Image 1 (cartoon, rainbow, N blue to C red):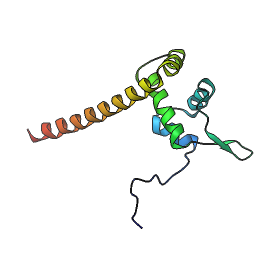
Image 2: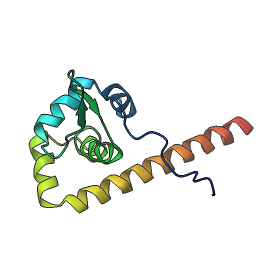
Image 3: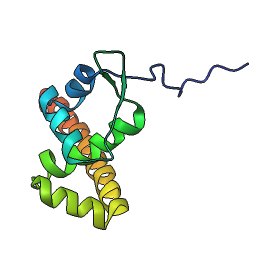
Image 4: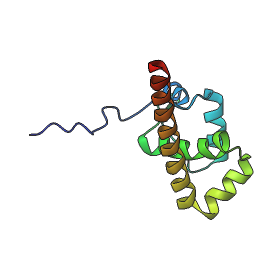
Length: 116
């Protein structure tokens, strides 16, 4: 049997790990869970420990893009997501790709500046 290198090794992430991924406070994620009803991580145990799956992290990525990156208010983000969910997802993907290209170009510029 071949080794699948693309397979995610972790099925669940705790709230601290997810907050760190996006540079957010845990309280921000809890608040977003209240404001965006489709963002519902699995909870376990009597302490109701949140367990985020990849689908939850994808939802957070789109919300983060709208609110933190693009500067929309929560009401505007809700409206965008309810009216054009696929468009918001696509814009988040494009923006993430462009930011990656920008970072690569900046690294190349630093290397080029170091040669001079």
